[in-house]
Length: 298
Image 1: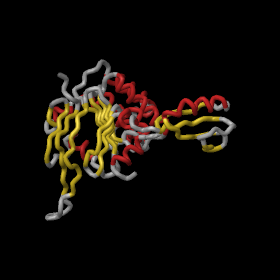
Image 2: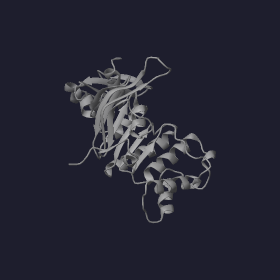
Image 3: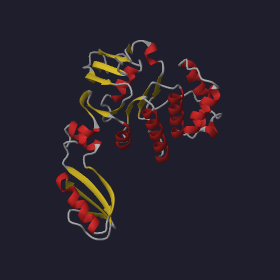
Image 4: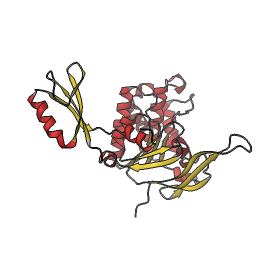
């Protein structure tokens, strides 16, 4: 039987701001399992407990109660993190090093053996659009470039698990697209992803399941189908000149409407007869709306 990539049971983390003060509960009995080969999106507002959970998994802080393991090895043991690629929300890299030096160092730390290590690392830097800066010191880089170095560092070790805390932070739209494509490729190759992001659209593209956390409590764990399966309305967008019943003009020549599932084919037929070009058909429940409902704010 294959061990889960991540197993968390009854995880609690309390902080004290001052002596004798009432502890702040950052995590309150979080339990979840991420299977090998799964992409799991961990969604929540600022301060919900996402980064605290990741810090426990990375051995950066100790839980107050509960247990967590990676591939069956307790996170209390350093060997649990061999072969684990990690990108924090704000990566700190030795800025006097070059990207190539950072990646080569990661190979040694994770005991990864590859033919021609420099060529292997340069290939990853090229994938992330950094080949031209491979031998420049990181202190001269923008936030987005530093973020891409951190992602290349995490991927070059051939990780069996990637833990990514806001991996798209600081990236421009082209950079986000490239990183999402690389992570999709990693997932198709059998890699396991555990990621947080405020860019919910990109999380929707990557994740097999979502954990919705709020104020330290895991409110729900659902698949995309479970999020949208009970949603009766479908969003339809089209391009055309003639008004169609049930559709409103979003802006000049573009129309949008929400129709019941039972009337979808009739709506599509009406759009076709009116000479519209269909742009989009999707369930109207987005991940953002589902999260707001789960935390009771809608």
